[in-house]
Length: 139
DNA sequence: GCCAACGTTGGC
DNA sequence: GCCAACGTTGGC
Image (cartoon, rainbow, N blue to C red; front, side, top):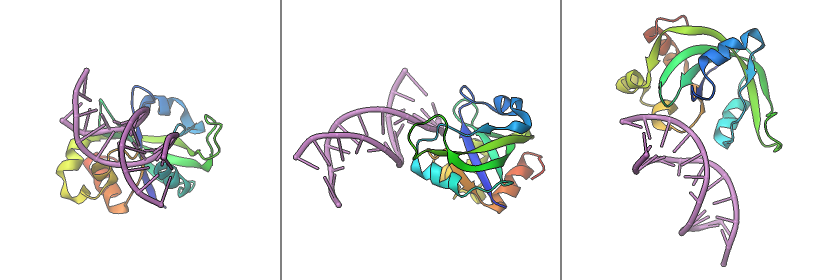
């Protein structure tokens, strides 16, 4: 079991939109970056991820589950681009903000802090547990 | 809204 | 295969 983080601009695709898809979930489409695609290729069904709102919110707001492994992105004609499908699992009781994450030295190596532009990234288990704890949310 | 960081494209 | 120009992301 591995852990990940998915970034989205809430103005474009928000946690509420994700929740509205229910069990059926949704393609995490639109990624046009090799690094992010390569991260998605490593995902397995059942892996969990943080759903992070960028821009206006800048906070981890929910937990999602991978429900389909990488497959061609239906929004692209270019077969280089792939995506996984995810569904909402549960919201964060208290969202954990980027500010909190940046203030905590345990997270100094996270891509969220070090490589702000990477939209899909791995999260190690220690960080996963610590951030869930900060958000009062079951891991 | 600005701009720094960084990824991608294309000319050579 | 290098690198300048350009585009995009995302924090501030």
